[in-house]
Image (cartoon, rainbow, N blue to C red; front, top):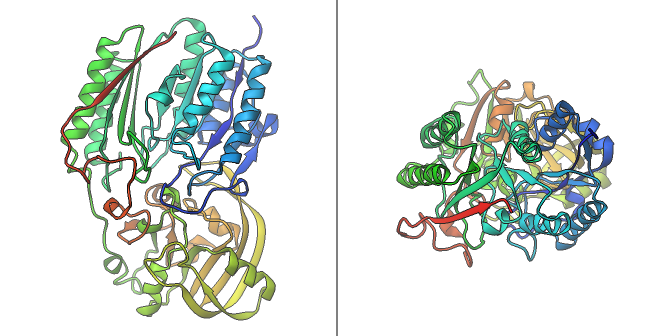
Amino acid sequence: MARRRVLTGGIAQESHSFNPIITRRERFTIIQDQGAVEANRGANSTFGGVIDSAKEADVYLIVPTLFRAQSGGPVDDTVFAEVSDIMVEAAKRGDFDAVVLPLHGGMLTETLADPEGVLIARLREIVGNDVPITAAFDLHAHVKESTLEPLDFLSSYLTNPHEDQSSTAKRAFRAAMGILDGTFDPVLAATFLPMLTLGNDTTLSGPLAEIHAYAQNAVKQDRVWDVSIFNSQQFLDVPSMGQTVLAYGNGEVDEARKVANEIIRMIWDYRDDLINKYPALENELENIEKSVRSIIIGDQGDRVAAGGPGDSTYILNYLLENKIDVETYFPIYDPEAVATCERAGAGQEISLKFGGKYSTVSPSISTRGKIISIGKHVPVVYDGPSDGGTRTHIEKFAVLRIGKINVLLTNQPYAYIDPDYFRAVGLDPDKAKLIVTRSGYHFQLNFAKIGRVVTVDTPGMSSYYVDQFPWKHARPFYPVDKIDYMPRQYTRYRA
């Protein structure tokens, strides 16, 4: 029997409809071919999960390209077109048995509301109905009928903060192999509900922990083959945005439909409990000078991990105004400030204005400080567990020291969900009393060994006060609008 071959790759990014900064090609880490396989073997990422599954099953992977970027504004149409064309050309060669795609599902382009669906549909048109196509998505993906129509199977993360990226892709890979072996005949029952979760989004406790436990019990009891729950990213102004539940039966749909309806009903019944407010910044910093433990803060209002621009000065202005002068690492996106530091050179004291260009809830900082270091293309390898082993880099940076505050200026926005971002620029996380990240959840897993982790209620583009946005396409949805409980349903049999 010939060795099986699987086509994989694509493009992964999470978008924010109201972030005006278009995600260009330079924001992406681009990998391809067998070098990509070796560099990501064992990583706790969806691509890592595909790689490890392929090795275990003795399957050869074809990787035409994989573009990956941190969250931000919608993706440049030409970037998406480039990736799509590369994947389609590879599909036309036809030297594979299945397609398994490690994507995100929450991406937008300048003109497309469901680019993943468009990419998968293009591949389906090439390979026909016999070749299985499966995919793994983030649980904050926007999933609708156009996404599901060309797919034989879709799996989502089951955790938030995310720590099961690899195992999510392994479910998608197992589904593809089961279809090829004739042991899995995927029948999908999907339900959709125009509703957002806002603040109480962790699967570690509370309503979502209970809901996910219920879903996994349905799998363990063989009521269904697999269940995925998508709590849509909250900043996507697209039609039909909201909650999605996928329940897959093996050759039958009735029990899958029951499970999907039971879960979406649980989500609706918990709708008000899924809204929560984060602690106030001033309360968390009240006794920081006397605190023995360091504190790592997630800036809720400007989370690059949720598509924010990463240039909010709100927390830094609070530190300066209240004369909180402890050893601090504070990251901010400002390419012009980085360029100014480059021209001045490391070791120089300069006057600098930075931040607040896109995040206008707090004014720009005008101050004087010493340039501690400058660099470019420095490698970052995630400690994990969230995305552990993932390799990326910081393109350009400068560290400006103001008293005991180290401002990490970068020419690209980063979420800083892992301590290695700071180590990469020469800042030891163990020596800081206060570290600010541009993440709300995932940093908590990776920084837990450094100190106390907390997400604070700050204003900005990625705060959960979603009535601040000029919605054009997504409404009506709960809780901004009063809606009746009328879930939309969809069924897909494999052709």
